[in-house]
Image (cartoon, rainbow, N blue to C red; front, side):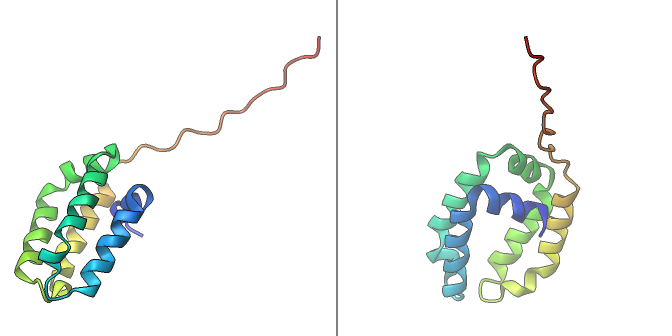
Amino acid sequence: MQAALEITARYCGRELDLYGQCVAAKPESWQRDCHHLKMSMARCTSSHPVIRQIRQACAEPFEAFEECLRQNEAAAGNCAEQVRRFLQCAEQVPTPHPPAAVQTQPLPAS
């Protein structure tokens, strides 16, 4: 799975699921009817530093994707190329690695 979606799912999974279900259930009116869920997901993702970094570094391809969705409300599949460009950008953004496990040494017996 692509970096941006993995991070969003990890930290904002509930919001992502609700938004995705709404979009799938309302293909003709998702832009209007799911807006509140989109905003909820945006609030969640804006609080995570890695997601903020991706959004900053990939603002241009993300805006192109959003514009495509606005122009293709009933045919989001027409935006596959814009999605690909955004995800390709997101995968290039360096993310911090989790800290390595700390090896503990037993204390000498006294």
